[in-house]
Image 1: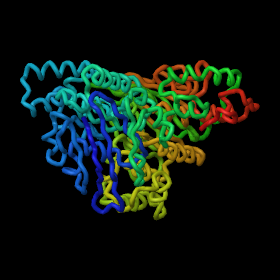
Image 2: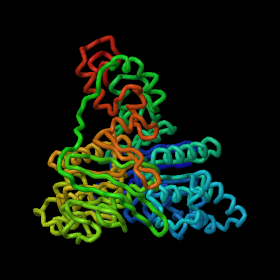
Image 3: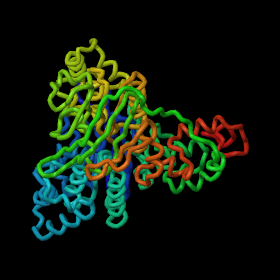
Image 4: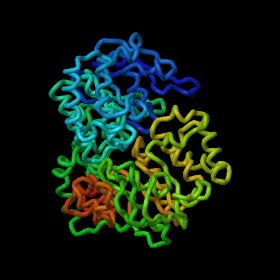
Length: 552
């Protein structure tokens, strides 16, 4: 159904090709998962499947890409719309109408589908993706996750034979992600739809994949194979696979169910052992407080009577389903949302304080990092950030190099991947050294390596006496770094407590390790590895990494 034959892509001015001599095939009716580090070329590979590369992105492409027997060299994206449906990383950039229902119908209008058929498909898609209650909502008022579901739906209504998705669950809460992936699985199995997905949150999708396409980047060859085989060699892997590597399990588990079957002896070994207490609760000065906070958009209240505070030394995760009010809470703390109630951030009321004064007290990295990026190059963005923050020259560039050392300084921000733009925006905000750092979906578009570097930055900020508040659907990130979790629903805080107490008790927000080793309260692979290393060696114990069945 999809075939790449010796395909290479080089963008103008690039030192080396983004893709080089790539050859593979994806049969009809399979789900192919594309994995690889941030900036390795995954988005370029996906865009080559419907002709966006090179017809719209520029650059030079050699070799041949065919989809359903049609060459992308001879057919532009508009000529392939009946065959390939494409959903990019930024759904808002692809919308052409104003409300949900119109957006779902637009693609069918372009294909001259009859009104009766259009109506039927719109209703089916609304139900399939849980969008029925949003049908008349303006697209601009939706949360990032809701926009992502609409973008997927607008492609599904055209009934393409191939569906290409770039980070489809990055802005979705765990429940919504499961629903979308389950819907895709039904389309693959029931209708023989061919689906290609690039996704960094492998814990969500790896168990659904029929094959994995590894894009290592750096000029290394693209490799394809069965998911379990590819996870043995992949530099990026979900926690359940890392736990399997630690225990020496064969074959490597791809799902929590498979891992629980293998983890019996590991649970026995860890019985009675307490997880390391490596998270301290913030006890420093209060950096922000909200009392009876209300944020409304017209007649709709996004945040309802919320009272909370953040102290120095805390890493506070704000969780909840899409549209629960997480982003609105963060925007209110930096003065970007119309709010009532009491707000105190670093001694200022952000609603009436100039941005130049507030910049040292609080900084926000929004869901769409492009909102902060205006310059013509990465280097210029960093230099502008240093000037705006009155920081030492080179501050933002040093932060960027620590998080993502491979981003060229002369690259235009719009030419970066979504993850690279987010890292650049984070570096811009951190240049001002704000006491409170607000991150809205900070791991969107980041691979596991980039996430580890981000966690290092977050921990350093807290060690320096600052605080971090992050709105996220990434339960694995929360398990790794958060000291406290707020769970929001319908604009209200419904849970507030230490991370282990909140996430372990929640089926939706529990990390993979907690599910595999339940009822024991483990959160991360690193916690388990530390505990196992401290136990007396037992060569006969397959859970002992020092024994003969240790990590390969």
